[in-house]
Image: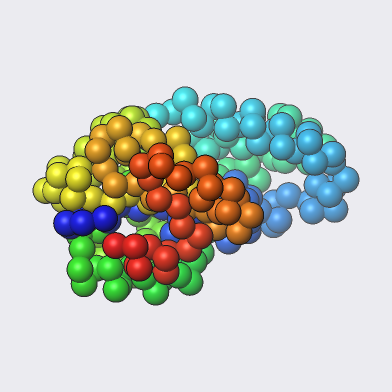
Amino acid sequence: MKNIKAVLFDSGRVLNGPVTGHWFITPNFWEYVDNNIFETIDKNKVASAFREADKYILTQKLMKTKEEEYQHFIKFYEIFSSQLPELNLTSDAIKSIAEDLVFNPKKYVFYNDALAVIPELKNKYKLAIVSDAWPSLLDVYEENKLTSYFDSIVISSFIGTSKPDSKMYYTALEELNVKPEEAAFIDDSFKNCLGAMKVGINTILLCRNKQVYITEKIKSIGKGYKVINNLKQLEKML
């Protein structure tokens, strides 16, 4: 990769992940959900409940404030609760879980390699976040004192579309004032990487799972994109 001036990152599973290991099980989820009852429910039924709620939230493309986000996630957890009546979640419990998801800036934890690489890359490149997320993501970066490292933060809910829509990538490129060929984009989703490639951005697929990394590395040969296992490899590649 030559003449790179900017690096664009996906956020979730690239720079950070949920502190609980599940995007919608919030840090204080078990204060409102009885874990003993939860563990007795078939895991497929739980997964199905999250999927039903996810169908709703994925249709809510435009959210510009945390209050809007909060109202939508109340609906999300209402749907989740309706699929799992065994939990006997009250209206107040549902609102509290939604509040925890939206207003708790400690809901995500940053990977060690991300914390190490971001300051180093900032010395050489313009940096951006291009994430399918909601307004509360900004608080996560602020809480971890990382906001200042990024020259552009593009969040899908602010512009009403998501990756791989080219608008997501072009918004970042315009804010950074760089051409597609002058940027590198890192995502853990091949679909999103393909969207960046179509725009003309140098593209890197991140596979943190070692076995998946090996498989994807082989599949990528001659396909016009790179594959890495961690962000330290990104430093060497640029």
